[in-house]
Image 1 (spheres, one colour):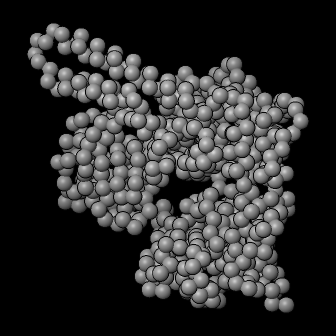
Image 2 (cartoon, helix red, strand yellow):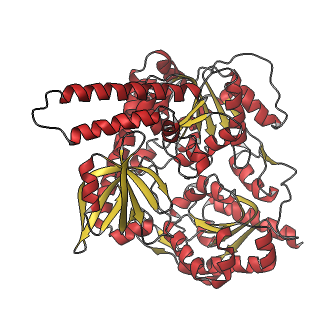
Image 3 (tube, helix red, strand yellow):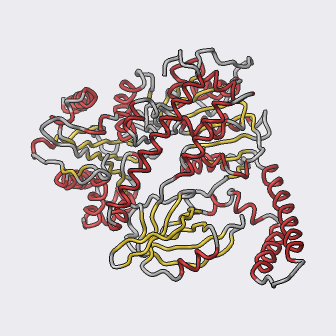
Length: 626
């Protein structure tokens, strides 16, 4: 978008691109549903089959919930989480037949999932259906809510219109003026960021490269804002990111009300969810009794009962009154309302207004999603890192036309005065950080003295690249959704890790709980590596210390050792989506002490980034041997 375009034209253009993305994803989903076998979906983690159906009940929000259990393939990581739409199916002579309704995931805990059904008849259907399974459905709701949010921003008057016009101009953002506050447990750039947040009238951006304490800074900024405001809204793109920031706020003694269910279902997380608080309210048993009376009245309605409607309306009126009272008390007590960006459209928030909206992981969210909560606030604080994982965009045409450009990325360009870069990292050995700092952050990120020389073995080289070209491994293509696999490289990856473990020693690995992340950009390679790992006797004692996942699966995490299997190996120098360098930034910077890359250097180094990385690691290795 050029700055000559009016804000309204720019948002209309976004709406068209979002529509294109919607159609692309819907079509891809239709094709995948028709062409991909159920076995493949189960392996991808997008389906559970076979299913065991548990009990059904009405939850505290008066929704009909049913439990289902996964009984096979329990070691496969799945993609079900709160808020996602699912559809049930059954296999009839190996033909997949879908049931006529969809349901919504309430929460998932290991191999148990609770789904919300549209009505009672469907729970009977599920309990009497044989060979039952469940799979993710196409997510119409998120798209509808994003479209509505863009429409509101386009027509926006008042504060929403002001923010829209400011975000699409180069007019400097306004700030309050007051002397800086000092926070003894923050470093200088973290302190600057908190002060910038407190001074902002319109918008402030906390740019946090890997390991620089973005969450710590954000929690402090929220705490300080709550000294000035009674309540704030905190959002993020994913449930996991909302859980993470909520947990840190609760640790600081802040009353958080989490709208929507958490990803990790433990007692600590559940205790600050709206649903759990609603159930714990002293008026809840009374409300439950009224709802039960309503259900019984409907179930036993007698023909010609003239007082039926009168009784029903009376009970419904009392139930609504109690619901409103409980709701007002819960919202009245909470200092932070936390939810996903899409979750900010929840009817529980109807009529709520906030001074400040904090959006964490803002660089991973489509701009349209950020406009969902923005109608409720007067200023916006964005935190994240646009040099790490971008939002997922399936339509190549929409991506090329700019749908992948996030609100945060654009504001960093148009309003640099609103940005604070956090510059001291506390995670990595300096040699690992330095490459990332030079390539992505103009060399501005430095290592804290406590981590600068972090290492596991004496005289160890923090970064190694094992060139697989000498072995003449070749990649294989395994279908659109899985991408590529390189089986020989997978074997070498585990051999290399085994050799490194042997150098460290079994006892030390166990005593110090040295943990490892094996990362591959391709899902097929990840699943192949997982299977190989479970078969290897050597790794049995360390099973809990090793996790294997895609780059996206490791977002926001860190490990002592990171092993990267790059997969690509061909004569044409084709590297596909490894060209998205932000993913490589994430992969490398998960490591605290050691990075081992396995990749075909001639294939990868035709790209200038990998050529630079290869040279950088080569110099480290030469320096260590001299």
